Image (cartoon, rainbow, N blue to C red; front, side, top):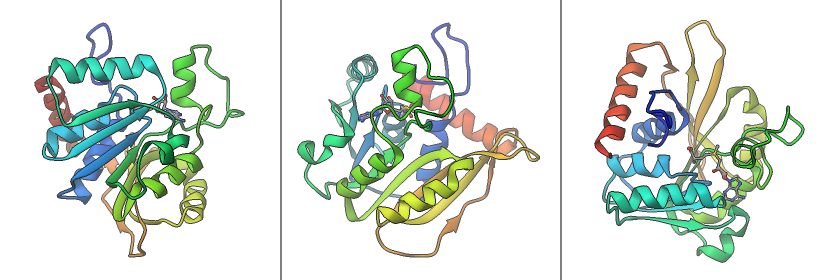
Length: 231
Ligand SMILES: C[S@@+](CC[C@H](N)C(=O)[O-])C[C@H]1O[C@@H](n2cnc3c(N)ncnc32)[C@H](O)[C@@H]1O
């Protein structure tokens, strides 16, 4: 439903949610509350809930169609510990109390409005381009929502690492864990996952994740199985 198969029931790799959830699994063993900003149809939360089923989850999203899909899926499976909320991350302070969450996650739009041709399809535009919120907005909202001892997890294109470092610092966070994703051993890294915290400590560099490696295949199978089990 959410990424490992398309509407024609063909398998395809929509890798971001499971690269991010795998990274979370490698960095944290327990948490009570989590919010996913720009949750779309809820992929990140459904996967996280499969692995950490005792936590309480919230997903915030602007687009009705994505939310409808998330809510239908949740209702079909009678999931009670995830709430999907229609709202703008820019309004986080009107929707939630400060420092409410152990974890904040997000897979934000990656492209500025002047970076390439804007898609005609409005939903695709909102998914990919910073129409309604920039990376800085996602980090600001995270800073407000996460507990002082909490953690923020997100995924972003590797080529934009300098921008990430600058904005992370501007929002008073420290990068405490990083993992890079590659298509193969000779390609450039395409995506990077980050863990942020409010207190400074040494950055932990996790082993690179390579798409055509055995580790990635095992990981893909694990998440594919979880996805199947959720049907
Ligand atoms: C790259 S998509 C990620 C969707 C989903 N989290 C996933 O990983 O599959 C980015 C999402 O952020 C949402 N979004 C963008 N700006 C937003 C805003 N200001 N408030 C709430 N959601 C927003 C988009 O509608 C889109 O669903």
